[in-house]
Length: 365
Image (tube, rainbow, N blue to C red; front, side, top):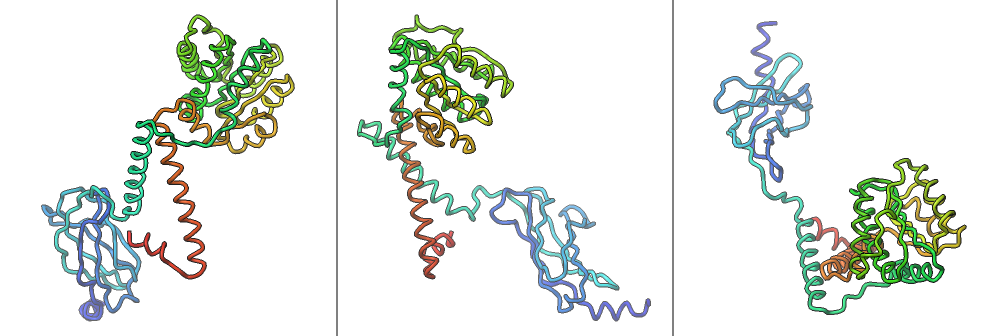
């Protein structure tokens, strides 16, 4: 077979025009290698790509690709180090190497050019937020639709006061790291402030000790803002248990014993949602619920008087405080969601009729 090797080398061509360059729009650590396929590509088993550092003579196998493929992304390189490449065409009987490519250096890019559309949307969103925030700071009225559950807070606290019964606030079984729990605490502050004004008692059983500490500070702040810090009782905000159904049983027991006039179920809830809501209904309390747990919302809607659905909980803090920054954020988000919805609907309709104006606009980015 030895005498056939020169013939095979003559018959089999190597890859040509090997090019190596920094992979565009990445965070570094990558060089892309391309080459022209030889005429005998159909006979190739695979292509082996060898990497050569500028200071070293021997090459290292960077990877392999199947025949018919003429590009390879080498992700095993260091930034700002020169590398050269050779591509070897592996045939059944021999391997033929290409010429060495020009050196290439990998550097991270500060911006991914493939995300221009996202950048445009982000800039537009920032301008919208800034404009609405400034409008709110100037005292101009920022319209936010009424949220029945939040409007009913005063009614619920007032009814409970008239009946001479306490108010029960259940912050769910979420942790302090849950956004829903933080939203629930913002509502708790409003409830505590109203309760202080009406000289009512607020009971807050907690599933998590850290949430308990936050709830204590929240209620205390609400009573202080109402000018009645003397009515604050730390023992009414306590840790119950970290067992899911033990917590549900404990809260149910409080409902049956205390007979609260108003019950707030605000936060993260799971299988215990309906148990709590039904027990609250059985004692005749006015109930205001709220959660982002979509599987539990139907139970709250069916068993409570008012329900904050999903994002209404997140909007509660801005809705109740009227803080300009928060109001500007809510208005900006609403406008952007409206624009997205209109764009999607318009895009679907136009694409249905073969008009590609919107899709072509996004494709240029």
